[in-house]
Length: 91
Image 1 (tube, helix red, strand yellow):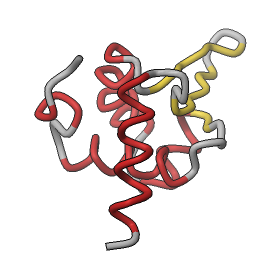
Image 2 (cartoon, rainbow, N blue to C red):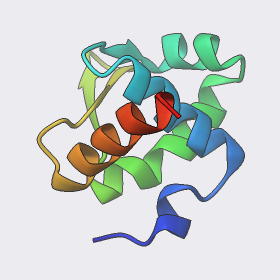
Image 3 (cartoon, rainbow, N blue to C red):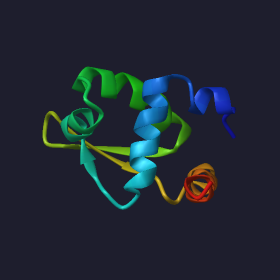
Image 4 (cartoon, helix red, strand yellow):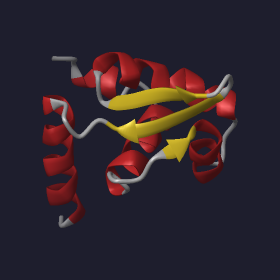
């Protein structure tokens, strides 16, 4: 299981994770996530990579260049984050 410092390594990584948690059933293109986060696609690529490696986010390639991203709701760590996020929103 990853340490919290790895999961919340940067403000932008935390923002990406929060956006994915708040839209847990949504599938994003890398460009779409960048647009919603108001940052570049290359920034999204950089900050999402560790989340993919830890299993919190699933990434698939469509065609030669398009990447799609979604929260990995089957991952145990993701399930814990989803539960925490739902409770935290009520505070």
